Structures are given as structure tokens and as C-alpha cells.
Image (cartoon, rainbow, N blue to C red):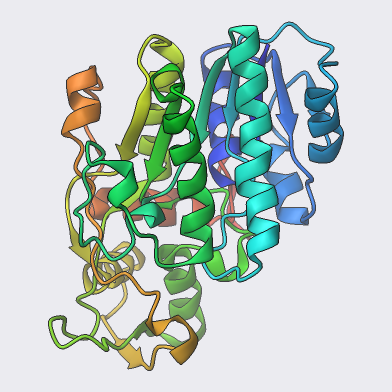
Length: 329
């Protein structure tokens, strides 16, 4: 049995979809399923059971998991980079992960978990997954909550026995429940339908022009393959970047959206809210030589190809991974 926490979320449901494509359905989904879009994410997926996340945590704490488990892919937790409640983030992203990891390690179960590129902070120490973790300085409480577990695993001497993925800017089908945390591809698509233009934040850093803030945009299908690489190779451990290794700008992304929609480019630059200016990353770009050296050899989808696939095969039809493509009409 494979347990996927956050199994109704964006990456989690995509993992289940990919496992189904391999003919695997002995899967336990762990999720609160607290949004109708999450229910749609898993409606066409094949799995053994759906467990409430708090019930599952109690089972872990009491050592009463009723299944024979081969792997835990832990993608649950709070993914909001603007969440301010540090107590909540510590409980959800650090303590929960620690309980699961401890259980998995004690039982000899493969443990794969979601770290985050937010742990790199401003990037002053670079974006290499080979850097000393203690030198990293996350900019927001979310990044700190993810970083705490990476540090804990290192301090416990178990980091090489688990696999953590520092996901960069993941986008794709299944993110429709994420509100303000939806990707700019999805939000841009909706903005173009509504007004014919895309709104991007102005730059408040003189080193970057408006819309030229830089990101590493990773398509969900590539994020899946990178994650499952560690399921297929259980002897490989550590923290690894999950990104393209190619830096792109928000302007590039907006232009890709317009092209995929066959619309004229129209970008409006708006002021960034003061509340997030000090926490805003102006540049992220994954160093991916570590995962490549570990043996991951799959080609990575370009921003333009990924945006076209997402919009033309999913967003236009309001579809998710695994759903057949049927138009609104």
C-alpha cells in the first residue's frame, strides 16, 4: 500500500493519477477534502480508501495503521506562502511531518516529503540543494515551517534515509481550489477571459523591471516524475530541488498564456501589497545537477509547452488529470 497525504490536492492528486497510469490503485489518500474542487480532483481516480488527515495522524501516533505500507508520500500541509499563523504552520508543516517520518523510519517504510523552494529565502546563499541547510534564511513563516523539518532530519542523522523535494513554482491541473495560491497561469487565464489583460506586480527592486522578477516554473507533470523517481529508487536520500533549472520571468509566463489562448498581449502592472514586499522573492532558479547526478534523466517541459498543454487541454475544458476532454458546449 502507498499512502499519499494531501492526496486530493494539486501535486497529491497528480501523484495518484500517475500511479493509476502504472496500474497501481492500492493507495490510501489522506486529506481533509475541504473544498468541492478537491472532490473533483479525485473523482475519477482509483484508490483503496480516503482517510481524514486528523484520524490518520491519530493512527500514526498510536501505531495503529491498519495496512501494510510500502511508502508514504507526504504532500499534505499548509502551502500558503502568505500564512502568518506560525503556531498553525509549525503544527501542520513541521510536527505532522515529524510524526510521519518517525513512524516511517521506525517501520522501514519509504518516506518522501514536500520541502519547498521557499526555504531558500532571498537566495543570498544561492539555490543549490548541496548548500549547508543551516545557512538558509527563509523570508516567511511558511518557508520557516518547511525548513524546520529539513533541519530536524539533518540533526537526527536521517536526512539520507528520506527524500525531500524542494518544489519550485509548480503549476498545472488540480490547483483550482488554491484561491490566491493558484498559479499565475491559471489566474492569468481567468483574467484574460474576464478583461483581455493580465495583471502583474510592479517591481519594487531597482534591479528588476516590472514583470521581470524571475522564477523557475515547473509543470505538474514534471513534478510528478521527479517525485516518483524517489519512489522507484528507495536507496537515494536527501533534499533535492524539483525545478527546471531555467530562470524565466513573469512577463515570459504572461506572454505564454496569451499565445496559448491566441490573444493579443496586454499586461497591466499593479502595485505589490506592502504586506508582502519584504517577503517577496525577486529571483528563484533551481540548481538541478544533484537530482540529475542521482539518475533522474527525464526531459523537462519548457514553460511555453507546459502552458499550452495546461490551457488547451485542461483549463479551456475545466478538466483535471484523468478526466476526458469535453467542451463546455
